[in-house]
Length: 213
Image (cartoon, rainbow, N blue to C red; front, side):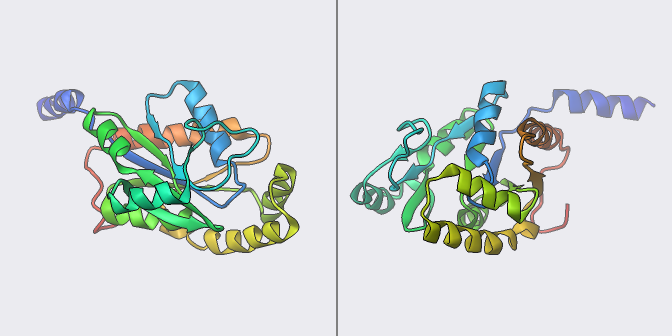
């Protein structure tokens, strides 16, 4: 019992290490809505805003939803090595600012990134210990309805996004966690992601990505 007690005391005083979380999933699955609820809940985590060249939508705010920049500015950011990763998605560029991620981690904050699926693999190569979370719809039909209700895509764009979503779903087994975001049950999805964060913070041994966890 003495050995177990000493082990418990040691665990109690272990410093919590900052973690990098990546939230991804097909277009229209509700990533932005889930992150908005997480921010409103007050969970202590830093949300690094993505840089993009796509046009701003009516319900969005610059430097809040995204950092909206020109193609020229984005190219300069690549040239200056200011992005952790970047990718072209549906004809627009998206990237994660490297400085913001590094500063937050250096200050001891956990960080949450929203990244398109093709960008997750790039980040994992640079930060193998990053924890990836795949947000799923409850069914393909639900995803199609969400995209239609969003009314931001033409019929051709909608068809392209749905075909892309089919391909993106094939990457699900490569993620660390999967969370279903059912229509009308966003709080459950948020609660599940919070539980993942807590579980990872309680991990005794850091992830070793060269072996199965």
